Length: 168
Length: 114
Length: 89
Figure 1 (tube, chains in turn purple, orange, red):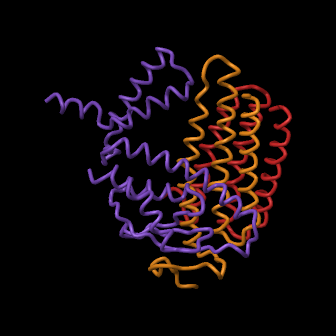
Figure 2: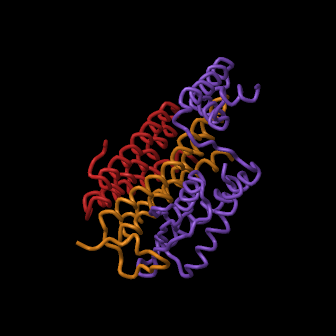
Figure 3: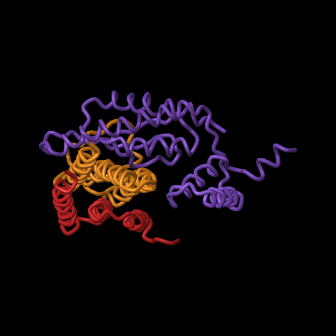
């Protein structure tokens, strides 16, 4: 009964926390009034709009998510330098490629996060998702060993994401 | 000390932004041009925003963290807009450089040329 | 140190704005122009934040945030237009 009450009042706890943080950052303050107003808004907005969010987000292991975020940030910095070197080099040396990645993740959130990660780590852009949501078309700026690149993406990004967002 | 860090961050940011635009200018086809702006610029703007965050946190007494919002927003939107632009380019069948390698089962994305 | 570096950064950003603008004029087709506009607004954010640093005013943050939001919506609307031939269905 009590649990039911909680899920009615807080349909999306993750969204509530994020909204609260964004409100405080936007006002750039930790004054008591803003903390209270932000909390009211953060509870009210998910409650009123819960009909638009049919999918429940549940994070299975926060530690894996955190480690994943650190890895991605690190990769962005490193790979940016590599891409900068590639861009400033000669055009004719570049070997662009289109390839597709078979997806093991099935949840929509997992797929979209994987696509965003692929686009953010320089050198690869996710271009399109197939109609059955099973394959992702990826374009790479410069790649020598395509099967190796696919394996790298699957091991480094898809495995942790799959662990965090399994079917819920 | 802080001054040096700020200067380095601003220079790194401006440099990466420039690299992104150089990529946009000189790379031979659309899909390759997509790489420059969507990433080099996010890191470039990210570095400049971190510099701004440090500057305003130390010049005034209160921490100024709202620059994180712009950085976060850019890191969320850049891949989304890149994805949509690539999708639009595939839809209107933009030319790609002849030496583009193809791997895997790609024929579902091939359009019959009109 | 920051005061000596800022003019250099402004110059670098000016060059990158110019290069994106050349790509906007040259095209050769719509997706390339959309990409050039996307780059232009991101460069503009960097320029506005640098201006805020130069003038020592935190007010420019709001301008940067607004440019980011509007630029993103613009890019999405233009890409949607190419994909569907219509923006609001």
